[in-house]
Image (cartoon, rainbow, N blue to C red; front, side, top):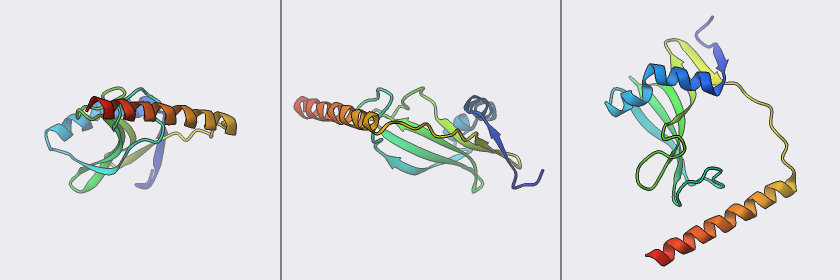
Length: 135
């Protein structure tokens, strides 16, 4: 196996390896640097998260080299949303690189996409309106 080989694993195996390596805990002790590479409001939040939650992609770096890349929801109170833990998407343990298994895309009918957009647009408007009224 060469240094450029990538091993594909499912999300549960990826999470297990991420937790066993203790990457998240090591960011808290500053042994690993966590650098935000993408920080934006999600377009349509599938999970029920508070208004003004950020969807973030974070690169974990050790000695300048990326050892993990995760996705997380950062809530306005500073806590992580969804499971409360970052969701790993890439890992490098030693010389071995791990990536998620790519799944074939699921075709969603156009009318279903529009219904979802309308629903989440209404939810966001109601949340924004209630937030404005509470201030």
